[in-house]
Amino acid sequence: MGFRTVVITNPCKLTYKNDYLIIRGEDVNMIHLSEISTLLIDTTMVSITAYLLCELVKNKIKVVFCDERRNPVSELIPYYGCHNSSKRVMNQILWDDYYKKAVWTAIVRQKIKNQALLLKALGKPEYAKLEGYIEELEFFDVTNREGHAAKVYLNSLFGKDFCREDPNDINAALNYGYAVILSTFNKEIVSKGYLTQLGIRHKNEFNFFNLSCDLMEPFRVLVDHLVYIHQTEYFDSNYKLKLVEILNQPVRLGGRENILMNAIQIYIESVVKAIETKELNQLLLYEFA
Image (cartoon, rainbow, N blue to C red; front, top):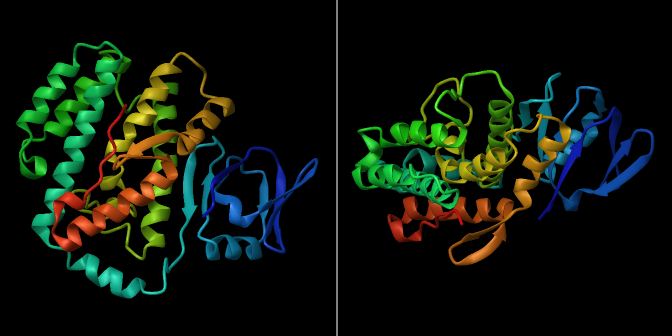
């Protein structure tokens, strides 16, 4: 299993040779594919061979491409994540509706709880209001406590005038960090043979990653925390590297500590197991600390 996130920021040519990624720029660097989990191409001034792309897919390495503004814009996803993808997709289509919704409800409850824990850790009194929303949360969040909590939470972190639609460095950093985590979820879901398009609550016909958006919710707090700490800084390449490094941050899941990219894999396995076995106690949720 790869453990490195490789970020390409300078003009270069990327090629493949003998199981190595070859980076030809001012210098020549080589990285064995077995070490790489994610390849983030953070510049448009890169040429890459089709041979390398094929080998990256075969090795289940997530490749994320950025646009001219260095914002994540697309990623490389294989057609088939594992040898029995067809069987797993059929299982996914037949997932029991009640247990899907029950798992999603637990995920959203944990998301709001993590938001409250962060606010409490930062000494923000609004955490008490989020704790109230947790108590009011109904099955499948039919009263939209998640939306109400999000407004209180973001205004507490970034000010009452903050809006997620505004073009500023805070939103750019949040979007970038969320995209990094989303990409990791996409990679793990596809590698297990499931479809990212088939969501539980997210059902947008134009969203290729509905299921990933459903499952990543409790982990957004990691990006929020980092952006809060650095919110006065200019959103530059160094800032982006800090966001990418979140994938290597240690977190606790199911009583054990793992780096985030590995914890996401374990978490997704627990989600699938909880739904398919109809045993909600199989679900392992990340709690912010």
